[in-house]
Amino acid sequence: MNILELRGVSMTYGAVKALQNIDLAVKQGEWLAIMGPSGSGKTTMMNIVGCMDKASDGSVVLDGEELSRLSPKGLTAIRRDKIGLIFQQFHLVPYLTALENVVLAQYYHSMPDEAEALAALGNVGLGERARHLPSQLSGGEQQRVCIARALINCPQLILADEPTGNLDEANEKLVLKILHRLHESGSTIIVVTHSPEVGEHAERVIILEHGKIARTTTGAKLHKSA
Amino acid sequence: MNKRLVFVNMILRSLVRRRLRMLAAFLAVALGSTVLSGMLTLYRDIPRQLGREFRSYGANMVLVPSGESGIMSMDEVEAAAEHLPPDQLVGITPYRYESLGINRQPYTAAGVRFAQIAKTSPYWQVDGSWPARGDEIMIGADISRITGITPGTQARISGHARDMTPFALDMIVSGVVRTGGTEESVIFMELGSLERIMGAPGRVNLVEISIEAGQDELAALAAEIGENVEGATPRLVKRVASSEATVLGKLRFLVFLVAAVVMGLTLICVATTMMTVVMERRKEIGLKKALGAESGTVIMEFIAEGAVLGLAGGIAGVALGYYFAQLTSRSVFGRSVEFDLVAVPAALAAAVAVAVLACLLPVKKAAEVEPAIVLRGE
Ligand SMILES: Nc1ncnc2c1ncn2[C@@H]1O[C@H](COP(=O)(O)OP(=O)(O)OP(=O)(O)O)[C@@H](O)[C@H]1O
Ligand SMILES: [Mg+2]
Image 1 (cartoon, rainbow over the protein chains, first blue to last red):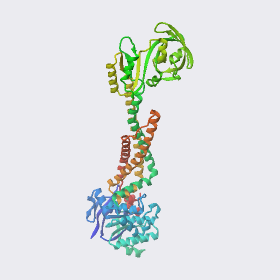
Image 2: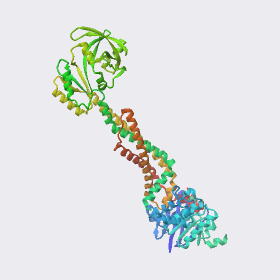
Image 3: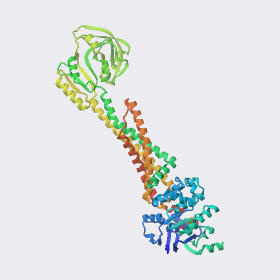
């Protein structure tokens, strides 16, 4: 069963054609990587799939819901209920502690539950640092807080845009381990990355060029060619 | 852990963590509500204070002789005084007018009671000192200028008594009085001294009365005296009463003007700060929206921040404002103000309202922030 279907999706910013006529289907529980040169439209695609932007053209169906028909409020609700976002820059609210940042996602979603949030931080190895402010955490730790926050509401679809872009190798491994765990537990994952080492963990890899899908391959093949 | 707790915690942390940035806005609100609550307190207290001040400001009733003779007797004056409530009576002084010479120059002399004049005419300014003994007199500033007599010197008083016998005696001029009115060309002495010199005691031409009473009560007292006392007719002094209303009106206008200007400035200052804050926090707003916060939720957060800011600034300002109102009242009126149960909540409410109002425009900007900026990494 497909959790996500894009049919003829295009996105234009003025004269810039960021995405052109994209067709893509993502199965429930699949791990997909999006790769491609800078400016090829990867983030644009994430924004559309993540309900943060509306495509200029085409149809996007997420979990049976046609996104182009939804109001901003409806998009917000989908974003809140079905999607977990992980960013390249570890976006945390600077005046809230790690724990409070995770609780915030619960707060916007449904009910805050501190014990659950603490457990989520424990799962990413940050049980001890729950009461620290983002400024007191390393980049890798901040990214893990972000991940704990993205997962706290058990989203059906996890979108990660360059989740390891600013991390060293050790932290990259940690993040990949967490993604593997999620994949094994049945989550659908879409990861945007420049790095083949990250891309090769995916089951399927699509390569964007000039807003079009230039190639489709698998993580395993990517691993061999590297 | 409930939602409200998370919300309150977030608002407070956001304000505390941004305290340097918020300081300007906090101070603006605090100063604004200082001025507002101070002025409101004074505004509500001033009529009370000024009323008291005005009532004790000179005579507000005079007694004039009823008949053609231009004279009433001291007995009649005393009979009239019986009708005045003693605890409200500030001062009462008789005036007996005679013609006298001082160093050969003819002038009007008035026999008065100096101890009472200080109360019925508190605005008199005296160079030297008030006469304390029977042989001391006070002269108006005009006489002093024309005759060259200065305080502390002797002057020769001469003339004819009521029985036409001439007299001449030396008296000490203890003070010179300045009023800006006709008193400046009058010689003042104790009524007893004048009666000794002129003879015919018990004659009075005019009585000035200062009494603490509102216009209605004053009119009632006058009517009562008019009915019951033969030879003396009471008259109300209108001038003081009407200028009281004029001054109050102008004062109120001034208070409103200052309050409006101050609140306007506060509004601008807070709005500017909040505008900067929203611009600085675009990423945070985008993030919250990406996490699933609706525009309304984000708006509520900013408005709550504004309200807390307004409340905190307002409390500080109200406390300061009370202090300043107290200070002003003590130095201007010599009395303390009471803690005003209307002015304080009103100023507090105004502070919160202004702070929230100032957030509305910036908050509109916040609502427009797109969640997509989070991935774009602006
Ligand atoms: N808000 C926007 N307004 C105008 N043009 C935009 C906007 N967002 C993206 N673009 C353009 O769309 C194209 C695709 O951008 P996108 O961010 O999707 O690239 P990307 O593949 O994520 O690149 P990178 O690897 O550098 O992150 C680029 O040419 C970019 O300049
Ligand atoms: Mg990108």
